[in-house]
Image (cartoon, rainbow, N blue to C red; front, top):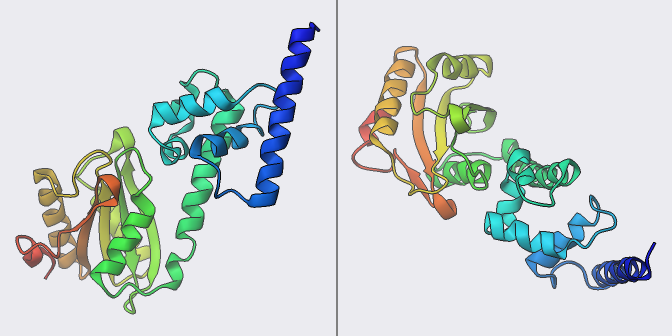
Length: 236
């Protein structure tokens, strides 16, 4: 090993030790986003400098949240990101989503605001379009939630059999559809409106009720179709 390589390794080791010691003493709040990401990358890249890669990842995905919201294949397209690093970053993002939604079944969802908050908690970090169904008991507790479609398979023409099966299997009284517009406004398209109308009619004929269709837009903006005077009659 050349002396320059040895010096470089010693330099990286010393820097890592200082960053870790700082976290032990002062916590994480003082770290800038790229420095926190640099620290996380230590655990999948044990020897090389991770500072440049941290900057590259945030530059590619726009923010720390964008990095953790990216899927494994997207992460692997970034120079310097191998399989282990991609899995680590994606797992952190998934763990955050699960922790963020772990208490949802213990709550009551009697108001529009509560239902909108629920939709945002599931969809705010998604970077692809995703549609979900939330099924509720008569006392407004969440009984079950499923993904109707997402990504390349996303379609506003929601699969009605999947919706009915979820409601019946969970013995729910009513349901809410929610989907996201990751880069657009929180407002319904023509196809969103047509699909919502079709689901409302279908469920009403079966003795069930769709009580809202919530759309989560960019920056967690949220829209309730039921609260829009133009569409309120759909849900009566």
